[in-house]
Length: 390
Image (cartoon, rainbow, N blue to C red; front, side, top):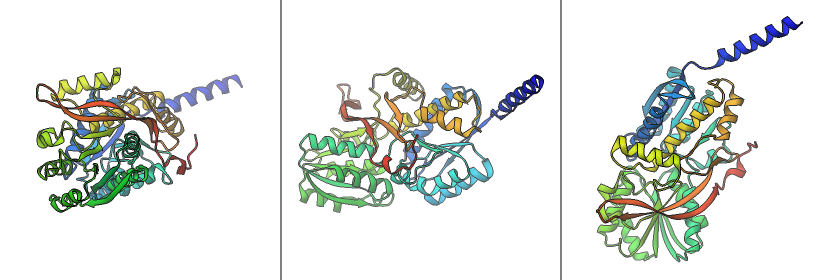
């Protein structure tokens, strides 16, 4: 009997060792072309920096990277999802830039048993009724920054705001969420085509006529540059305060926006001025490699890779043990560049929401100055709709 037990134990140990992956197939899908192309490129930098720090391994296991450009096009994203499943047969996917591409593509990946670790888009339904046990979002639920900023503006006594943004899923959720929380006089929402409309003259005439104390806008990537430049050209920059989120005026767009970006206040879950060891290392390594400060897009992707690394290490490479790997991801046992970070029951973050302002230093360089905290330990408003309890 004792010999049988010893043999059984040895067999179990051998099977466990056999299950440990010798290679992890990592998928990476972002939009590198189109209106948000600069965003996808920055996510790539965050990915590259994190993987380099881990010697191109995750939890000590070598990776094979499958990187694709979804072009910000939902149809392309769906095709790529099928390619990831049928041809590459990936284990984990990360990246995922836009809600417009995430919503149609992510279900295909999850149905195929692929782990999703999103690093940017955070659609409302994925945080609520359509939450999934194998989907984790390191970034935010789409409304998080905007809801917290609206509540902050209530406390600041801002009496009237004109709301406008890009006409797609994230825009509807972010602007719509902010309007739900804002208590003053709200005008809008006004939505404009994200990737096709460049001229905002008619909409800015309406802003001038409404004469609000502030505008609250969501225009990421190239659309943010266009908005700020035209807002300034319309003579509104020095008359109406601009509030947005940390996707509008960043190190990627300062050169194009110039002084039109000065004074813009943005909500974000990260700043390159946050004082913690993980962030200092990330910023220093990024500056050394790319010659400038990073943006939120690189920071979130960097965190996503480090989350995956921590979970793979915790299960000793045995990602086939789904229950153990899921538990390791939920634990989020990594040092986030954001400081305090943990997952809620819907596997979206509970995190601080910070305030930054675009300023110009004496040397003429623009930066996002950390100005305080809009909310501590922010918990998205849809987690109660998620049936997962753990």
